[in-house]
Structure formats: structure tokens, C-alpha cells
Length: 412
Picture 1 (tube, rainbow, N blue to C red):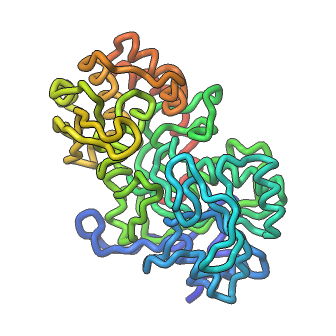
Picture 2: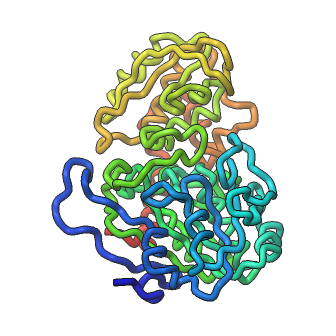
């Protein structure tokens, strides 16, 4: 039986089918999650009836059969799809980090594709107005970290949709590293950038629909007319391999769910002179620099961080930092993902890298402050603080964020 528009959508919130009953096999094997798009399509797009629709999406916007939602909607006369909006890396995913595809007509569908990357406020509202759509739909797979830019594309598009007088609908997808807990430092607004607009913890433990509810309820000066289409079958304890959904890399350096598992911690190495593994087959799992040797892995293992071990590793990135040069460092091996804390691990690796390698340096632009959300992590590590001292410095802010976050969760 189809789900009515009222049953599928609720302004500013979401209702939906409960998770499938019955015990699942290890890591949820055999139990399938239905995404927001899958549920919307199954209802014949009734929630979008009579509206000209534009979709903010990228290559992750796929069905369980790995068909892109734009291609599916374009071929279905029950929905009036009029435009596509591409984020960083582009709608079809042709651009590397820090790039987009620009304005063009999609060869497969003929639809106009508008570029949203680095646009916000009135400039982005003008794009929505020019497109002629009534409703902006968001469908992108997130990875659970504050500095992953797609959640701020979501934020900017919500702000712009309100300015342009457009309705906004979020189609939900799983947080691939579970939605169990918020972890890490909370952004100080004085350090707001496109890798963090608002006070959210470094690992937020939310889905994109839950984040949209949080943004609308706490951060937007004027709330947008918001509706969310929730998933069915997803539980907060699920890792991505328990969903039954196909993994499509959300960006060129996010090839697997294993990458997402460590990313909220090891992306901090973007703020240093060490390689974060870009240009290798294991980005964010391999870290290193010229002159680093076995002492770093030994120091990191001595921390006895839960759920992870470190292997002395040597690699030669084919692009990005140290392109074509052999560097030394570590590879992370997560052996208990239930116990693993990516943010504590990232801090422990920064502390031990600085202590074991004399060449360690922060990026000259203090990018580490943008990633962590303040200058606290950098200044504490520079002052000789250990891992526990650095992690302890954000606990009060994190507790306050967790209390706010709790009000916007829609899954048990």
C-alpha cells in the first residue's frame, strides 16, 4: 500500500515505517534499508505532486539498483523534474576536491545543471529562482563528519531556498558510521567556514534529515518550509555494511565505508604538513611524510587507543602532498569498530606525530583550526598536552551539543 503525502512527510520533521522486525545477522546482514528516495518513489512521488522540482545531488543519489535518482525521476511522468543542482565534485562527480562542474545541460537527460559550489545566501537563492522550480529536493550521502562539505551545501541550500520562497525536501540516507553518538570538539562560530558553518561536533552522529531539522530549529535566522522523507529499516547502531545499500564514493577520496570510519579523525592531517593519504588507494587510512619512520607507529600503539592498531607503512602518493615521493608513516587498522573513536584517534596521532618527528608542522594558514572548530586543539598540542588533556578540553561544549542534538533525532 502506498504512503500518503501526510504519512511520508511532515513539516520540519519526519514520520515513517518502523524498522523491520526480527533479529538481524551479524552487522545487519540480510536486512535492507529503504532510503528516503526509495520510499518517495514507491509512493509515486505523491509528496511532490503538482510542483516543479529541482534536485541537489551527486553520484551517491542512487536507488538500491544503482540507478541515479535523476535518471529515474526524469523518466517518470509522475514527477515534474526541471533542474539539477551540483555540489563540490559536481552532479556526475567529474571534479576533484575543491572543484565543481559549472553550469551545463546534462547529456543524459537534457536537464539544466546549476553549480552550487561555494555559493550561498542571495547568490544561491538567485540560482534557485532562475531555475524556475517550486521545490528543492536534497539527496546526497553524507559520511558523518562536520567538515565534510555536503552537509554545509545542505545548510546553504536551506538558507537560499527560504530566501527564494522555495519549499525544501530532504530525502534521508544512512550515516555510514552509525548514529550512536556525537564526538569531538564543537565549532566556535568565530572559526566558521565551508567546512563548518555552525556549532556542530566533529563527528555529529546524525543523518542528513536529522541535521536539516537541527539547522532549521537552531541555526537558520528564518526557517525554511522543510519536509523530510525518512528511511525505513535503519537503526542508529548500523554501520553501512548492515544496510544492504550499495556504496557509491561520495567524493573521489572516500572510496569505501572503511574510509568514512576513520575520516572524522584522520582528516585533521589536512591541517599539517603530513600526507593524509590522498593519492593512494587508502586515503585517510595511510598517513605520513618524508623522514617519518617506525617511531611514530610505536608511539601511536603505546597509547593503546580502543579498537585500532597502527602499522609502520611506506607509500608514494600519485597526487597531492609528496606526489611521486616515497614517504614513511602509519596505516590504521580498525579491529573493533564498536570501540573505535575516530576523533580521539586523530588527536592521538597528531600528538605522537609531533613528538616523534622533528619535521612536524601545522599548515601555515592554520587550517587545523577550521577543521577542529577553534584554536584549542592546536594550541594545546603545541603546549605539550597529551591526548587525554586535549580530548578533555571539549567535553563541556560536547555535552551541551549532545543535549541540543537529542531533540532532532528521528530514529530510535
